[in-house]
Structure formats: structure tokens, C-alpha cells
Length: 381
Image (cartoon, rainbow, N blue to C red):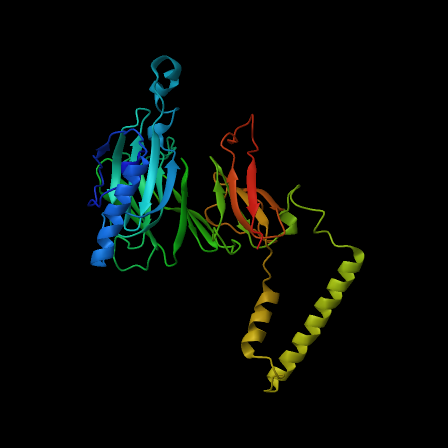
């Protein structure tokens, strides 16, 4: 990506079908004299006028390489003859600005072509959806509109929803918006594969069928991570991993983090004593609350918060992996009363909150290699 496209991108109106082409340019470095002249031209006029120069340069907020059908070697036969023809898959670059985003296709020649451009406010997340996997009993309702681009903007299509609370699906073929999915809470990220579109919210996950975009299942028991990812997940070709807020012993699988968290007999006795003391203190507070008085220095909010924390304690570092094909529709609930249908693994990964996780690119689900590798990173704060 050359300097002209990266830093001097002009402010253009929305173009859902793209069309702009930026040719590659040789990288040139200024000499010492040219640098001095440029410095004088930029600084001296400001010193006399007192007003800074205004340039039509946009601030890049985020950049990401995207994998889609356009650069998928399994879908494009011409890429299988790379050594003989010199063809290579193009790079898909998504650039987010303070007022929109652009999607560029950069082939090996370096001639970047704009595929999509929208300018309706900042965009938090965007994904190019791959062609769905469907069989005899399922048809693609959006086959004539694909490829599709999922976008989470600050201002939704309806204009009345709160910021970042809807996912708009645009057709890269026609430029029109073909679907809008509304939520009541803000969206933090989007993930997709050939089976589902996953919308990540705070402490929640919603999965939609890739052919019809109807809700398939949802999770409401995610651990609230302090950041940088508010709700980290990993989506492979079939499995979905997320941070659970509790460890359910009856569903716990083998492996995971152990050893450092195993308490000794003395530590267990001390912990039991602290729990007993806390319970007796709560009994005393409840009795005094029933009589209409509270101990000095204790507020009703403190009692309510402590009671809620004892009723539903959250455990950091727990990972749950589910099979998106065999999991049931509706709410995915990992509890002592629920069965294990669709649950692949449930284990403690770290004693700190998990902030990032990802499946390895080669670990696809198959009979020959059924266990993809899952990389997990914890939050040290």
C-alpha cells in the first residue's frame, strides 16, 4: 500500500460499489535540502498568520487484512497455478476512518482497487462474509446479492437505534443494504464463517444462520473482561470458544490450567473459616436490617452488592468450546441441570481474565485432525 493511499486519502462520498484505482508509486526519500524547504513551507506561513494549515488528510483508526472468497485459493482455480502463471491471491485491506471505512483489493501488481466505501460515521467492526455452506434442505436467500459485508456503524440504518446497536449487511455486488439486525445493547465485534455470523456483545454472544440470518443460538454467560477485548471469542471453521463466567464441575473436561490454583489443606481451612465468618456477618446484617437499623459504616448498597456477589460469583479464566453444528437452538446454557450436547470442552485456562483467544489457521475440524489448537491470552491486570 503506497503512501498516497495510506495518508493522503481524500474525503470521498460513499461508494458501495467502489471503482477508484490507485496505481503503485515508487518510494522516494527527500534530501536534506528538500526537507528544509518543506519545513519552511509548512511552518513559516503558520508563524505569520497564526492559523495552522488545513489539509484534506484523514485519520486512520484501524486497519485489517481480510480473508474472503475473492482471495480464497480453494474457490479460485487460477490461484492453484501460482508457480507457472505468476498469479497470487490479492490482499483485501479494510481501512477504518473517523467517519467511515474503505475496502481495497491489492493484487501482486500493487494496483489497489477500491471495492467499497461508506461515510456515515465511525465504524466499530466490519467483516466480509464468506459464501455460506448449505445442503439440500437449506437454500441461500441472499445468493444474488453476495458477497456481503457486515458493518457495525455508530448510526444504524433506522437512525433511531442507540450507537453501535445494529449490524447492517451490504451487497458488494449491488451496493444496497439487504439486511439489518437490531440489538438493545452495543456491539463490540463481528465474526463469521461459512455456517454462522457471530455478533459479540458485552457478556453475550448471538449467532445467526449464514443463509437466512435468523437467530440460531445465543450465550448470556460470558465473563466480563476488563479489556482490551470486552468479550473475547474464537471462531473456527466449526467450533466456537468463549470465556465462561463459571466453572461447572460436571461439564469440566480434561486439561487446562492446574497446579498453581490447587489449594493446600491449610489454605482450604483458612478459606472455609473466612467463608464462615462472612456468612455469620451477613446473618447479623440481615437481622439488623429486619429490625430497621444497620451497623455504622455499612450502606444498603454494600449489602445488596455483597449479597449478589455471594449468590452468583464469577470465576475468571474459564473457557467453553461448543460445536456450532450440534449445539441446540436457543440459549446455550452450561449448568449442572443442562446436558452436554454441543459442548466440546469446558476447562480453566488461567487464573486471570482471558483477553484474547484464537484457533490456529491449520487446525480445521476434520476426522483426520479433530482437535484444532486454541491460543489463549490472559489479562495481567
